Length: 441
Ligand code: HAM
Image (cartoon, rainbow, N blue to C red):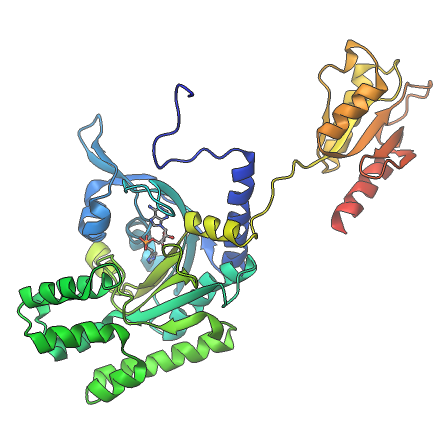
């Protein structure tokens, strides 16, 4: 056993894992760019109070928090949303709206470690601030789904389940749940797949519901849009929300994601601040925890920064996604990628001459390495073996100076393509152009 292993729930990223992490970050950055989002970041350590007030009990119980040497109560960020609201709240006046910002923070939660849940993870956060239209909700979910599509996952692999805090609220109030008891009722609905029906009924009875009301509340978890219309259709506010949902589904269909979405009243989201459409994305086989989650949080800015602007966003973790890509054979394999291994082609090459070629190749935008033992003794066979083992595409053989003090770019080198074994002579400049054009193919 090594003396100092990584802490439980923390990961070491060896090059193999780093390649897979980069694959996910590339997809995140690519989608954020294509959807027109600007990148931001905040500090990993924040005042404890920021999270205690805003994140809801589930996250607060999992905080990595401590008192710093200046006596401040601080916490490692368990999520990005409070930092985003704090930062943007301070600048919102001069910022053109809607604001479309994204970030890829590392987050820390003191959780019980299990498959898909660690004590640190990276999360793509995309948020839109200052926009009420449900088209923004649709665009945002499309972005989350596009990450999955970009990585090769289809509507047969993953599904976004969406619901609406407003719908649930209206339905629960109509059934007879009191305003104060709503958080408990939300929690019962949220946990319905984990807890038994009996546990749910008991908890609802404890907040004053009779048997029929408690049963009806649990039945909400499988209700359809049509069912909602039939049962609560007299409520004009609820009808307006149902119309929003038609627009939402229409927009997501037009954006190319109809196969990926399903209405599901069981989706509540654990965080306290959501106020409208909420969603979570899962693998269709149901083997993993949620891949991504988010929704509208129209009151958080007002309560944290005093400025009343609507907002919505999501958090998309790297852990569950990484597992899913591996399960489906879509994770990249790490390949060392060096363009040129530069070496002596004959014994009399001055070291400085070899290094000048290395420098020229690097300046030409290609990667180049060479043996630090080059001058210890000349052995072409050994050097070619080392070049092969390095994973380089080309071995570049520098021969002795035949008198002409020419420019490095014009010097002739022998180039061996290590994959085919083919060998040609060309100038350094020609080699750079050739290797770069091969790259683009
Ligand atoms: P969340 O549901 O707490 O939402 O996290 C979003 C995603 O982050 C989860 O679906 C999961 O993929 C990943 N995740 C969360 N905790 C862990 C963990 N311990 N280990 C591995 N992955 C994890 C939020 O954080 C909200 N702030 C998202 C948001 C942004 N809402 C609006 N804007």
